[in-house]
Image (tube, each protein chain N blue to C red):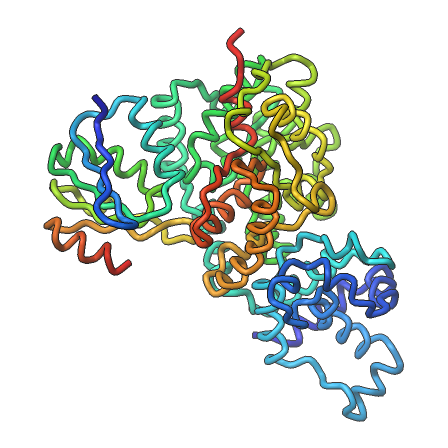
Length: 421
Length: 106
């Protein structure tokens, strides 16, 4: 562990923008009320303002007169190894970087970004939780944090094509659209691969998957390491470049979408004419333009249907209208909103890498308790979503809380309801 | 007739008895079952051969709930998988009794 490296990273990150963000904080505490981990546990250390405390201390101790004075006379403690270990358990275990806190901040502070910077410093210092670090290492060594090696990818595509009776175009040069799945879909939800293939085919899309850019998940982004984030993004962008596609469609993964759609452009060269979309937007577009037809009322027999908004796809990505437009066709009489929803939705508790950290299980289930209450308050029987990481958290969470709702992916619902032309 | 039968063993444990070659429809049905099922699974291969089920066992492995397998000789290597947060423990046993004992303690 290197405390100095962490501080240096904090300091390097602390340009005028971060300084202005830190100076703007009035310690009003509204962010605490917005945080699902704080709400679920009442632990003041989980208040978002406290999660960025290391960054504030590094900034004040290095850049402000009062901070230097207080440190020099011993009124404020210098950041040490114990601090790094302590904050590691806070910012990786009890934060999904969902950024709901930023939405309520009256000063408009981008708290999620600042917490990501804290993670960056901790990653530089080598204080990343072991489970997360192991997944990052697997992604470096094998190309996948979940074991999707070349052979596994090929075998799972073969399986889906054989038993779901669907064609998946592989490495088609000159295709318009490159579809990149998340590793969790490839390993755990193969029916989702089949569903998306069915939709692309029905829409008449000129599409392909890539063996080089075979999965989209980015554990470097979870970890906060710029170097690893770039490495994993590069694999996807290189795959897209090799095939000469015009756009990349990210399937049901939220953080990977954020990393590719927004972070990539700030870290590396992304071809300006390369479009990056999320499958949720594409589904909305296909339905609206009549490229696919879904059966009205196809899910009206499933009891009350609701939608869980994912932090990076709906709140950040803005794909709020499309799933509702689709669900109001699929369940016109039974679609009901959770409260709160859309931009204000509460995170599932498993994002940001939290689901991968065994020691954080109690916390992620505590946070999911808020979701259980929301769902049961409206008597929902089916919860739809467009993020596979959320879906895994929902499946684990419904088992943990002994609930019996159906947990469904939006693309699978669309594929199941598609009318044959 | 499907290639597998699902029957309850006791609270929280289901038996999945594999009895013949998989059709594509069976594969999709079993995938749906693994997706939805919250409990533990006793996988009984006594109605089939190890060769018959090995390929599918390996493919289903990442989706399986906590499971104990017995009843036909399989290469335990097909159950090997990179340990990860989304995987559950799946083990092979020589007898139903051992399998059930282990499963009850999970």
